[in-house]
Amino acid sequence: MVHECFADEVAIDFPSVGSVVDRMRDAFLGERADADVLRADVSLSPREAFAGLVVPVEVPVRVTCLQCGGRGETWTEACDLCGGRGDSQQYHGVRVPLPPRIAHGARVRFRLRSPDESSVRVELHVSIRSHVR
Image (cartoon, rainbow, N blue to C red; front, side):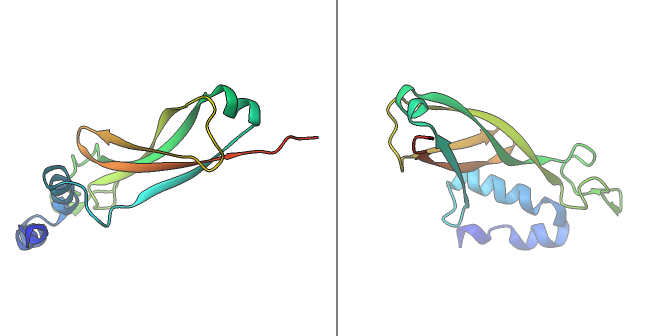
């Protein structure tokens, strides 16, 4: 099976590079069917929906540990900074443009990619608030 290639070598010889191999498989073989989609809700006023605007979104991404370089260990000890994972989660700010006259219930989908990490799929659900009295 394509997704099982190198699994035993990674587990036995290099246990801390498992996530790196997963990202390489994702990059070379395409998107995994079980990949998660991050969902977020955006609430707009009727005026904002009519005019369109740019909304800031914080997206969690996995980044390579700076201390161990993604190995998950320093010599024979687990890396203290990442706890032996080789990576950590950070939030990356993205500005997403919403078009004028966007409708209630609209979905805006995008993918955030970084050079050394797998992509993150994001879906924004748009709701338009009722007029406030």
